[in-house]
Image 1: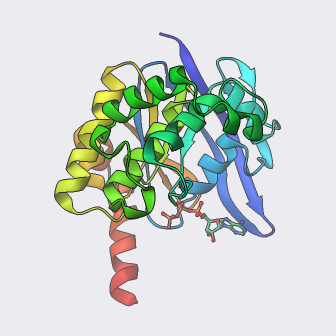
Image 2: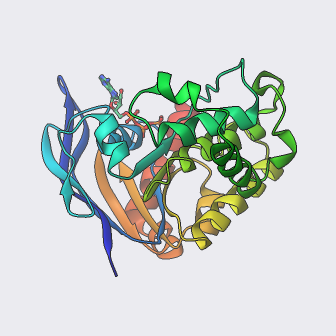
Length: 254
Ligand SMILES: Nc1ncnc2c1ncn2[C@@H]1O[C@H](COP(=O)(O)OP(=O)(O)OP(=O)(O)O)[C@@H](O)[C@H]1O
């Protein structure tokens, strides 16, 4: 097994707040790893530390052995890190296909402006069409993204991330805002990507879908890693149950 990502004793502090506290985990090539935890657990902060939006206060992050810890985001992308964001922001003056073709072009050029001029290239459009089919929105290729429902926009965002051919794809709450049936379908798409060989970390609040599709989970609470392993075993440990019950109590108290 090849270790793809190695997160070692990472701590992230914002002033007096410790958002991530000495967390270590790793991911092997080909895995679909669920990263979960109650509100405020520090999941997004951990993902930002991996993508380079925040720099860890302590610890180290390696991708295929390369130390990423202090590299800027664009260098991490070049080294094989791909991510979709919670907020979906496609370019609205282009079709869905052109949005993905632009991302495919960006892979070949250093500047996004020169990528704009390469957009008509057939090769990139072909790649984009394949990616749209892979994420299940080939029927929207010529649509204006501003007319798309949320489920389509989320798939577009995944297609744009895949256009960079990442060795590791980070998905930050892709199922948020979708109804039960849409979430189920998008989760199935994530499984299909993984079966096709894509290594994925999935940060999600939708525990039902995470437990259904992930073979391994990491659970974080209050900045600390409190569980790791196969979904059923992890979710049945006392400390993880208490963390989620605590979250339920907060809601009751509020
Ligand atoms: N830039 C920041 N400055 C100060 N505090 C921050 C910052 N980002 C996050 N925090 C704090 O760090 C803690 C963890 O937040 P984070 O957003 O990483 O959690 P999360 O698990 O992603 O939460 P949620 O599931 O609610 O999105 C919270 O207490 C939050 O207020």
